[in-house]
Length: 371
Figure: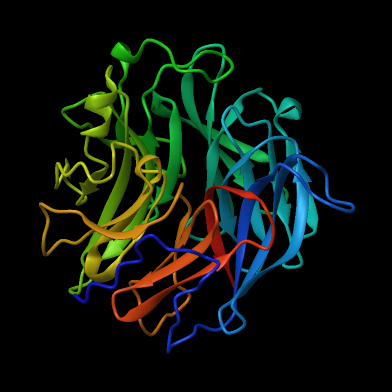
């Protein structure tokens, strides 16, 4: 695999590339600390960004003010997106392909009243949406089944754990939920970390039946974000980004950041400390591998099944976090990386490049490519 590392990238001096991508649209979330004209001096937003590689710039297509940080985003088939507020989440909204809000859900109006845990995923047939939630009075984790058309809850299933974070569907349509396992106060603050109980669970999407549950040997490794990847022989692998919650900073920095689930076993393939014990996001990489953002060590890292004991640095970017696949179907394996100063792209067979943000802004944890 060619070593095209995006090291110490400077968005004010984009790395030239002989293979520019066509323009791509991203749904993203960000915070503005200062602004001009009609832009508030501070605030949280979701909206659509256009990456114009040929022109060497990022264009802000739309921005929608929101009440607090957004976390997970979901691209929809019509070119729009859903955005979920950060834990303890109080709102869920839908924007159309032009970035205009078409639905808003306030959790205070939902019954029973719970808070969102930052992520939403569609059912296999696209008819339903699954949101991870927490009952703040008990700490119990739930998944709500919502009507895709209007976001109304139609069913609810226990996640058989606490602090559920991301959920994804498996190839057979069953639901996989990452129970982060961190005990929290009613306002979402961590507590009693010695009682952590993270787990990956598989549940039936139609009745909530528990079909399987897997745990790591170290309960201080919180299970957070997930992504599917496929090896050359089409074998699927589920990669899981980890968040270390050990007592000392040294223990956390030396902790692994990746677990892999084969459908039968959950294991940690590498103990490499390159990720700094905290994976902000995870995306599929080339050849069945995964790219993870080591946000706290300013490093993007790659794991590949052909070298399972290692992590490789592919980018050094300040506060790198949000990841998504390149919109290049004929040559999969590339990744878009969001960082403090701009968006970078990495691919094992193409030159890397980076674009600066259109103004001073702080991107949030996740983003998605829109159709």
